[in-house]
Length: 153
Image: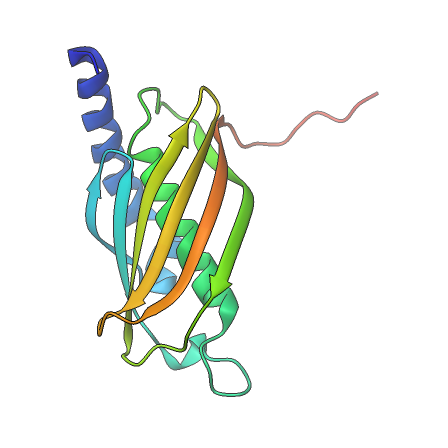
């Protein structure tokens, strides 16, 4: 990696940390980053009662959202062209393996392949006792801009 690319990645990591802190969704869910570096993230969350489903077990949607967030941070932390564009999830696969035995989860995400516009990420979710709770794979379209599209005439 060139010195320029290294500098751009460092700027991306700084921007990711700032954006993460401003994200209403991340704050609402209670996620916080333990580590962010190039193509990698580790997030933590304390489980709350409102993460539970009707049966009293951890709702799979809460885990899937956590997997998606960790993967998205890892993708953003390795981009050399951050600017105002974001990344959009185009595929998310989550394998639910076990119920947590503690009240905190840790998601670890690592970019496995990064192309010009698409990146694939592997994610594992463990509880703080080291029990593997879920694994996931996420694919992202990078450089997406959001806004209202003009209607076709």
